[in-house]
Length: 200
Image 1 (cartoon, rainbow, N blue to C red):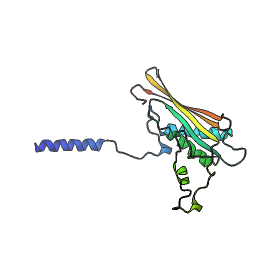
Image 2: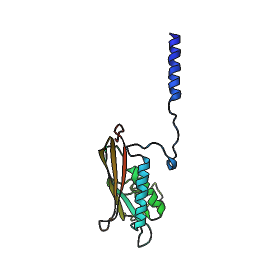
Image 3: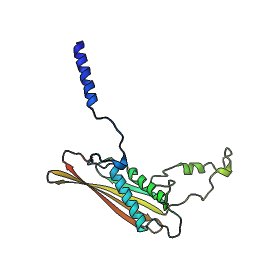
Image 4: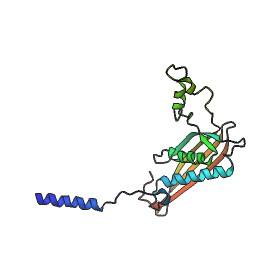
């Protein structure tokens, strides 16, 4: 019985030793296998292409000088995957902020403020517990000029003995004063691979 336990323990240890070790991946130099699902490389590609096109088109160059204020509207996930669309919009926001052309308001949104503290801090007005010289005054919040919205689509096809998965990341930048789209873009991400691979 003891001998059997020793053999089983040794077998488990051998299997554990053969298992793939966890390691860090450098996103800037990742040449690992490509998944049929969307991964961080796809979001990086889509965000980079969108921002570069927005800047090149002049859509985010304010003719009055200064920076546009953008709000993130609805970006719909119409894929088979549970995608958090913030993974895309956050990259776009960061890149636009770094461009010096756009800032994003977190004080308003379709489902309420992204950061509720903008309004909560204003509830301190007239409170005897707070020095009123440091409390935000009325009329200081800035309304957005632009709205970013979009959709991520997925289409699956059989191509010979393989499957092809197509993702389309479609974005619009709307001028809120006129309701006109200042900019629109679409980034297709096409993957082809084994029918055994899953895309959800």
